Image 1 (tube, rainbow, N blue to C red):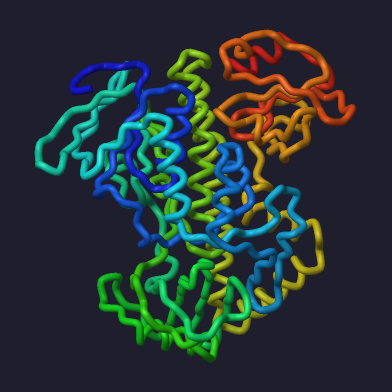
Image 2 (cartoon, helix red, strand yellow; image 1 turned 180 degrees about the vertical axis):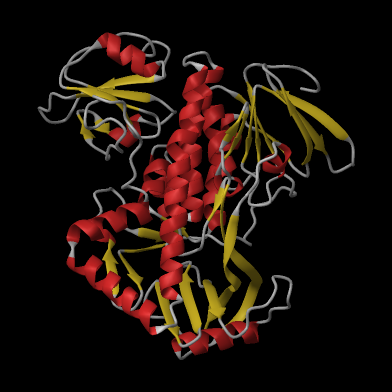
Length: 478
């Protein structure tokens, strides 16, 4: 690939969950993909994320991975926000009405296996040191483990290389925002005493702690002590983790044998654009949030699910270049919404003065007493409540997430596997995509008459009360 232009190649930077899902999707669709990663090859257990929300589970289900991931952790059906507010996840209109507690490395393990099986080329110990683009492609200067710099060329490049993104810096984008919490601690430990639930959260005085069970004898601890906010590189030992946990929960549950200790600060930042020419940003390279609600990894995976099918369709000539603009148009507002909601949660949780505590109590009581509001909050935290903009005059379903509806011969999310569009209709359609294998035609299990074209990411591209072959072809072309 040195110095060679190829219009059917995409380079993804970063082998975290976002980059792995994106690269696997592209390769599954038949696109030539290289995944460039600065670290050596290994699945790291030094990861912060531990919760997989319902919408992400649906996206993994559309890739045949959800049921296997479920075996790696435990589920919870209730989320407690502050002391007075609990959210009931069991009411979610999803096949996955819960939060799966499992370490990020389990998600990465499944996504890496899928990417390898699909034919993704992995380039480990490879660092991006330069980027140039023109009207036909992108030149990427990559320094390998031996120090030599090689230029790779691709039609498009996606930076999924985290909050210190070299790709974002190379295309000249700022990353404006603020630090929300200056010093958080993380640890993976064993406990002599088992907490009551899979997820235990509490705060008292100036301390906050959360303990999540990975289901294999290890527990993830996250904590914060307002009286000891220090820099990320300050030493951290198990005694400090125990102390914070005791302050917040009254006990440290006999904490011992830490396999990992880390200190970090929590920022709220978002790039002003997710696309500059032929270069895209996704995941933490595009946005980072406070840990409240556990939405970071999930939002990045949903970025990847939105972008992958659009890149594949464009690279393969099935859609116009303009389709790629819809990635930023759809995902940037959602990144901003997650920034605001997670930031609001953490600010209310940290409230010290009586006025803010009173506001927190009122917010909790209002959400608890108003089912529509609670459904909206649940939809935002779990990702299932977000919709994408629809053209004026479009059918009410356009832009909405379609649940895993029953079809005559299976489920919708099974039919989506392989990156396909799915046309659900009681009529017939034999236009573009059917013979080529990227459009599947299905029938409702019920007597419903609405014709619905579902995008590969599970959102409705077009719908009408009667089949319209010309309109379906226009929707497929983006």
